[in-house]
Image (cartoon, rainbow, N blue to C red; front, side, top):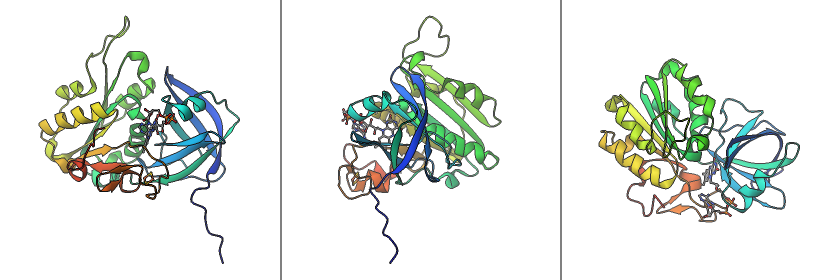
Length: 274
Ligand SMILES: Cc1cc2nc3c(=O)[nH]c(=O)nc-3n(C[C@H](O)[C@H](O)[C@H](O)COP(=O)(O)OP(=O)(O)OC[C@H]3O[C@@H](n4cnc5c(N)ncnc54)[C@H](O)[C@@H]3O)c2cc1C
Ligand code: FES
């Protein structure tokens, strides 16, 4: 009989680089011991031996299978420990889990992306996937907000995107500093100045819950329909496999049915923005 795969057993991955993105956010560059594939928007459980594990959405390209990047904000026990790790150690990867972005459904359309804070991590992976299929898209517009200029992650990404045909990228900050001469205001304010054909467009929103809520309301005001809006939901998770029930959002297991949902699918479920 073939050996049954242990779905809880992590794949070992060597940490080869740690990139400081902002005072609270670092990117971990990992080389898995075996090829590791994921679809953009799916998540993994990343673990440190003897410490614990937590769910993260890879921020690297889904086209690359021998190297994985995960961008981690320091919020508590496991993430604080991760922030002190140095290259050379091994971490564990379980997954990929859940339902990512249905990029094939974006064919022929404009893609408007609204991101805030660490929400740019899954979005960066999506942007790599969209760049790969740009011939099939009308255009891609990224609107991103961070609290301050130094809290903005992947700063070189914005110039790079603005040099790619069909791509536009804009950033704002809640509060500027002496050097900042760009827009000041929360991320959804950037939507006031974008030109989109809402009838032939989809919107993607990923960021802190309050931004997801007000961003979605603003996108609805712009004329998007509920089913045109894709939200990447974050709920406390444990197993990642639809077994423990930690991640329930109404009738859905966020780990199995999501984390990407259309607004249409979840708008009537309780506490979606908590
Ligand atoms: C599908 C998914 C994808 C995610 N992707 C990323 C990512 O790419 N980058 C990133 O930095 N973070 C991401 N997160 C959030 C990340 O999993 C949590 O920040 C992490 O689990 C916190 O672990 P901790 O032990 O450091 O904090 P804890 O000590 O467990 O808790 C610290 C605080 O964070 C809250 N918290 C704990 N777990 C979560 C959670 N899953 N979601 C939201 N809040 C939580 C707690 O309620 C508490 O207030 C994602 C979460 C999910 C569910
Ligand atoms: S995390 Fe266990 S059911 Fe979703």
